[in-house]
Image 1: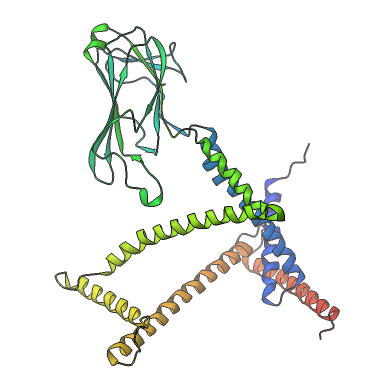
Image 2: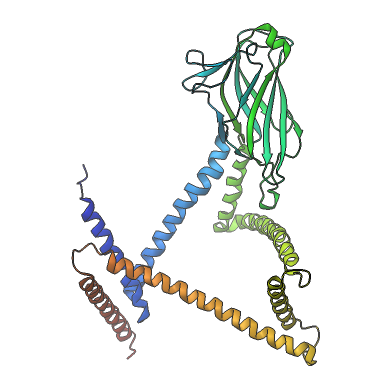
Length: 407
């Protein structure tokens, strides 16, 4: 049995280890030394291990393994709670999944409307529904309609299909959204530019309507476990085989396989980069053409400054003709100064970011110190430890120079 450690002691140990590593890394400000290299190796090892954990947790397991081995389904309705609908009651005896199912009498209420459903379905390929009928109705038909409001077009749309009632007992319906549904309007969102297709969002309700044959037959329908599913993407197993080809570079006889895998990866990357450039640069170029006339005065001044800066910078990079004529030389010179101003602002922002990191470390070293002493004594303690570590760095550098015969 492992010994128990008090929480305050554990937090104190974590703090002192973090303080030692922080100050040890900062000894690089004096010179590269063995203490710094030791802590640098610790940091790189932890970073590699943490990166591997993140890759497994956030990429391989949810995006690759789970998508390949599961349906990647989302619950639409589980029918475990009592409905507040006419002709529908909760049945805890006849059920398929969970704690219960809804018992629906189409003769009493031919139209069933579900409004408390998830609005964002992602990019499903099919629906999986469980229905139970207590008798066969040969001419019976249930109309299932998905109602939604597309957030991109701000217009109503729907997907409609027919469910036959020529069965008795429980039956699972697998309804392909592309082949089994009739589409009215434009239900899918416009996410093609980020690689997501057929995304359903803005779902408002699900409607189930019984035709006259079902109503007159007095049949009772049970509903349970409705889900939208992406499906088993078994073909993603080939990605694992293709990834193994990269490691053939370690075997000289089969090293050509790694070049084949790398060439395909570079080709895909080049195509995706070109597509992203067109989709991103096009709107930027369009947005750079700003009106100067026919707009409010403040907007006109702002647009004039923007267009002037844009043209001057572009003139500076225009090398098709020599910058001798004043009409070219003056704007190009102004464009160079504007670039220098921009680079100075960017560098200042970078320095501010580094100072923010340094202030964060000082906050950790001084204010988060677990010792019950004043802030001044905490600061002096940190300074003393820093001097000790810098002295060790000095001794390490001096020993290495003496070993190499350098004074």
